[in-house]
Length: 326
Image (tube, rainbow, N blue to C red):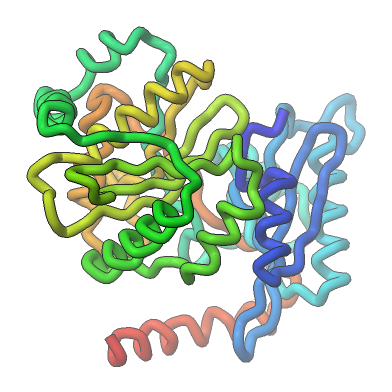
């Protein structure tokens, strides 16, 4: 069963609605759905977010396994669309090594990771009391403080609440120096993805929305995907209660895991000038004994050596331009 929402048919439909070309690619339970990206001067590449995925990635009985056939099919589809490389994100190092051995192309570390290498994913099957007991005392205290101050958390699809979320995520991105999607992207997300899958939760204080999150419910995992907070009333600790109420909702609906998304513990360095320490401390406070889930990162199957050389040669110039402008 596909348990990765970034490899779901619903996610592909969203990407298609935003103007991207998609390549559905499934074979006997193995999935490697791709999204075509186009770069100035360089051209196209095919991105397979958090994929390929499947239950068994080894050859059986000397024959070509399902996943190997899938990769061959993916390469064929990429070539048909003139993609110069395929960016993959294998779940394990074992799968990465199998891919390296089986494809007739060079597989190299990507210039940067598309998705966080570390995510903080916790088991939420224990009782609520146990989950609270596992938290850092400060996290638990802040949840209780938000409740005491009268912060209200609820799920919504009201237009005014969606507008408040958009305002918050824009403000948060500007405050923290993070690049966010255009407002239209979030609007399409809430419009196109099924309501039971993509859900908006908000925290309200004294009639004002002070925090809001988009949460994905898919497979056995609920994932915190996008969020924004107000620069006022920070003393009421609304984001703590918001996350806790989202976890409680996931538990009630029998989900097994809650994924807080990207963290950076220092064990795995990511290409980012952003300071991840604050958000990492916030997320890990909900279960400090849980180790982050670590992925191998993004890798490129190089189909066109010259085109890929052009891309890697231009990357330093692009970073220099950004630093000068910024």
